[in-house]
Length: 75
Image 1 (cartoon, rainbow, N blue to C red):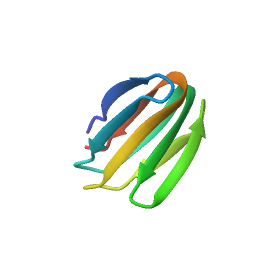
Image 2 (cartoon, rainbow, N blue to C red):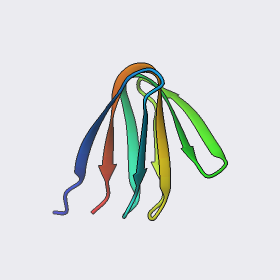
Image 3 (cartoon, helix red, strand yellow):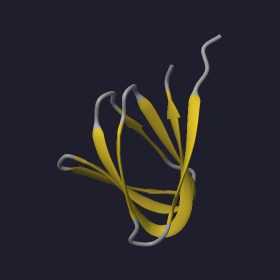
């Protein structure tokens, strides 16, 4: 069986994290609220919501309300 690679990203209000996906990735918001931006697209996600990020995509996560998210990379 192929496995997912999981990565936790903690964020505070107004804190930013930049990243780039190698493979398709799903972001799950576990706690708090964040804004994820990719090029000209931005999504506001709160606890329990998720987003799909395509492979080879540069993205930015900005904390709106302190919390953390999990990035699940497809194998």
